[in-house]
Length: 476
Image (cartoon, rainbow, N blue to C red):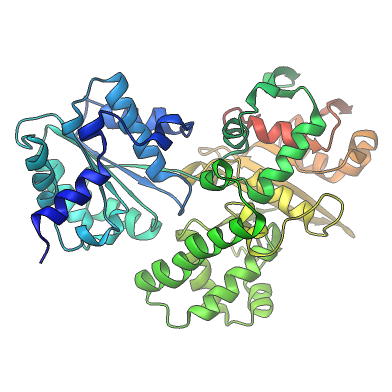
């Protein structure tokens, strides 16, 4: 039986601002995630229907961190009463078995707040640990019009399904992905080495990043690809073995051994672990159910299930194939699979080194893939692949217009300056651009930048690190 003292001690520990008026020092000093402004906008939104803000994302990408920064802003910029901000981490055993409404009332009794009358902000972290959380949260939103509710969780499928089916318009979903390259640089305190530049293109002027030194930007990008997706690893840089242990123990193992088996009743987690290891090692590769079945030694049925589970856990993302005419294939036999965070691969195996690892190009492409947005924005991206005679054509990233499903942006990723001097290497990609009524191909390089033309088409060459720094805020 949980005593009042045990509850109070834990609640006071989780809510230091009740006594100090501010968040814990580590959140007071650190840089917030870019999603903070949108998160606060939704949390503070007064017009329209009342909604709880539901923050979803992979483990260890900073959901708690984002909540704490939001609390800091509420205290500093919105004159919120510290005693009327309530935070609960629902994976803490002390809170197990207690309903959300009971948590709110118990915490409010400590601070003297009145849930029926006062303007209160209630944050529930890792809400998927509460059974039937969506029903409880919806009831709270309806019953307490003065309280702004926010929740977070790492189990995408369970959270999204609950939001759609039981939320009934009461939840506002937000997705937080791994650190972008820009955020990584900012956390390192090196953003002053980057700036902006304008490029004149066939579609008009486009802004991309500039750097004092492209070589320095490249070193940072390689570091990001190897260890840059998780805020904790960036802020508290340790040895490679420390990083590997944290990723394996707190991210991979918890997802594969606890989250997914509990959600999907996976019987043999060893097969799931082996399958994920295979995907992680081959990130950025073209795959099919046949190739995955043979490579991982699993049935196609198991491959389909495991792939669904890993996508729901935000560990991998799939880019479906289109042909040279940008047509989606009715039977999509092939697709590209990327880790949502390139640094997962380095932690599970070993860091990749430039010009010393045959998978370096795949990891670079995976890191670029990670800049293309998270959640709904990601569904607009495909990869193009086709045959022309004996030649094979491919464009790494093609963004389709959500209404017309016609190509808007084409990006070919290269960690090489060769195509800058030998434009003919991009003839197949240019054929795709021409066939689909576009005039511009974006091609990344290692160091070279500039515009090259072939007939009525243009190629905008930008170093990979600079284009990655520009995304997703300024997609070409």
